[in-house]
Image 1 (cartoon, rainbow over the protein chains, first blue to last red):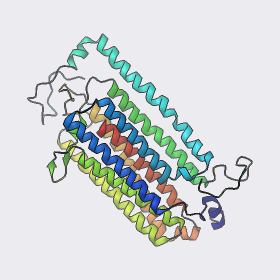
Image 2: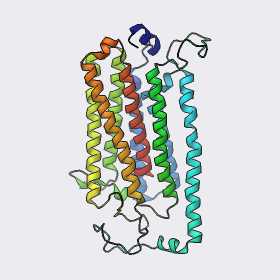
Image 3: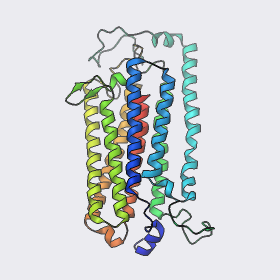
Image 4: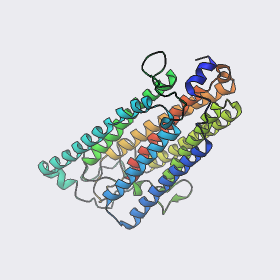
Length: 146
Length: 224
């Protein structure tokens, strides 16, 4: 790749695909989504105004939107040719199975354990008394789950 | 598609890259894909453990301090600052890549410098946060925080937190090193002699990926 002509042919210098306007617009979108998520987190923390699952759904949508903008604009994938876009995005679909299968598995393990291990269920649902908790990390606490 | 490509172009008939990118850049994409599965495995195992637990600490209670100011009324303020720093350094990285497209050595050096500065700022913030949590008694193997409902929490929370943010921090650290090497190479005129700044683009891809992973870490540990 020491040949300037070859580099030009491959990276396509000619057209101005890096417009400063687009970069800053992407930046403002990312910043806005992050601030909105933060505001929602604080609002939920203070008021508990809607179910936690609903709030989590909004967070996930915001995260995926941010991921899309970073990959599409900052990493420039949206401006590459279709072959490249597909060879990156199709394998990423594995994550759908990956997430679904493993979270389902974790949830199932929790339910089975609560049903068949009564001791664990009782222990992990009994609140700890507030005393002797703070700033005694090394102390053996009552009801420690090992 | 931004690039001027003749209609009916036969990509797979040989003689040219079917992806229309340079070899190293394609390999960087493939590396990032494999790395995303490494991070994915870590985050999903965290999710599995969290789904299998009856209780979990509230991030709004755990992450609510800010350097100098101390305990804040607003939770998550500090980590939002870290997110802002990383997004900002991603912007300066794109600007460096853009300047490289125009063969503008001075601008590339300026933007690379700011990107490195952003990376170092992020690492400093993380060092402070780790030190602070360690001071509170949190580390691998010990967890001073109670669950949201006041029940006893396990060490899963701190183990995953330190492992995953540590692995991400290690990526940021390597990114900073790579960017410093790129800055030195730019300064010595290596890319001017080559006639292109594709190396800056590859380093840029890696740097944006680090930012991308942080978006997911931020959601998984601080928001959910």
